[in-house]
Image 1 (cartoon, rainbow, N blue to C red):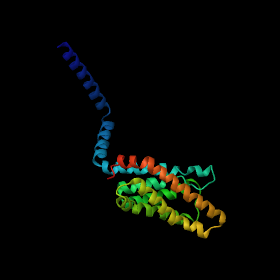
Image 2: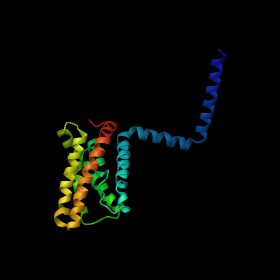
Image 3: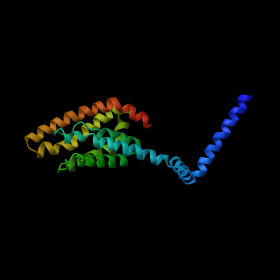
Image 4: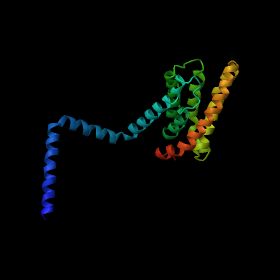
Length: 201
């Protein structure tokens, strides 16, 4: 019985402390309540926005090594995240994401040139068709990812191969094999995890 009275007194004490704190900080408490209600009400918008922005930042900086090592940014997370965003939030969002992140990655590495006209639309196409490929391959994220990586390179690389000099062609072939290989690793290691975390059917 004494234990019960002690616990009750303890709870009353902390209730008074909490109530006094809320009275002293009414404005902040009201803002916190409003924000909490908004977050709960619009969680279906806020959570995807946070996920997309986070993936976009990661993908954009995934090619920043190009500023230090002067080599084509073949090892990147743009293709992987474009596919995941498209599968999670639809082809239009995926296409916009792929195009925007491809562009911002080039801005980050100071590598804007005429060939941006090839790989920005190519990544948008990847975003558009990711869902179709995922369904066609019965939800196999590895096969989907590798197939879309190959498709991206088939769309983007011919401009380098046929319109550039010999050195650029060699870099293009190097990019192609390294890009497809690295994306194979990303989709093999992280693909199923991303699908499960985002609840992609």
